[in-house]
Figure: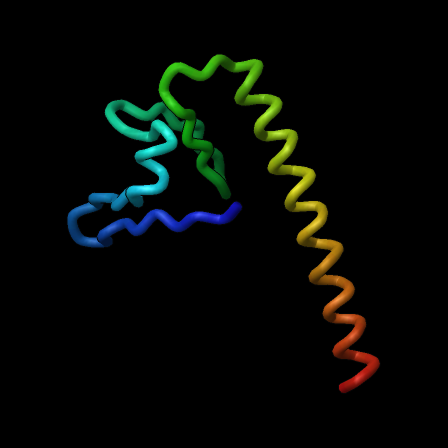
Amino acid sequence: MKRVIKINKDSGLAYISDAMRKEGYEGDVECLPNAITVTLIRPGSNLADVKRSLQNVIKDIDLRIEYEQREKEANRVTG
């Protein structure tokens, strides 16, 4: 599932959608940033669950990469 968090470039305030808040992302939400991504951790989650969740995200990204490559190849053949 893909979600978008809108961040105001002037104020730095972020908008978290109603759907995400209903999933428990409210109050103080811990995050783990690195050079390219930020992982938001739902309050009350433990690190073992976070790790399993990130492993699922990696699988999803791998699948999306495969689809992108297939589309590029299909466009090359038909283009």
